[in-house]
Length: 230
Image (tube, rainbow, N blue to C red; front, side):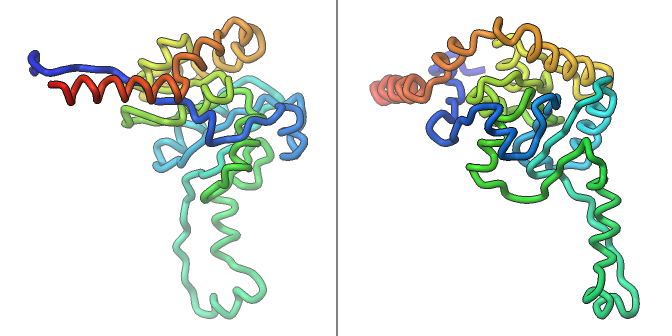
C-alpha cells in the first residue's frame, strides 16, 4: 500500500536486564516444587475465560503423572452471592470465598493459581523453575511473554497468530491453532518433549544474540537516523 516509505522490522528485545535468573533446582527448592515435576508456566495475565478454558483443557489432556500448572495471574471466576446475615457470618466464614475456592479449582493439587500482580523476584523464580512457557493468547497479535521465555532459555509454546507465531516458528518452537484442541495439546506435548530430549539442540545462544537489548537498541538508533535524514 505504501511502496514509497521505509519499512523496517525490529524485534522485541529480551528482558535480560530486568529479571533475575536462578538455577532451576534452587528455584524449585525455594518455591517448594519437586524436581521431577513437569512444570508448565503461564506468565502474564490470563485475561479471558476462553484463555483459561484453553489452558485447562490442554493441560488436562497431557498424559503425564507428575505435571504441575503454575499461573501467577490466573483469570478468576467471581461468585455473586448475597443473603441475609452474610456480613455477620463473614466473621466466622466468608461463603463467597469458599465458593470461589471450589469454582476456581484451587483445591486441585496439579494446579497452582495466583490472582494478582507478581513481583519481579517471585516471577523470576517461577520462570527459572519452569520446563515450558505456555502462551494461551487467542486474538492477540503480539506477546512480550514469548521473549520472556526466551530470556530464561525455555521452550516456548504459543498460538500460530500474528507476530507470536512468526517468532516461535522462526526459532523452531511449537505453535498451535488456538481454535483446535488437538493442535493445542500436540504443541504442548511437543514442547515438553523438546525440554526433555532435544533442548540441547535449541540454539539459545543464537536467540540471545539475535534479541540482545544492546543490538535491538542499535537497530532503533540506525532506523531513526535514516528517518531523520529523509
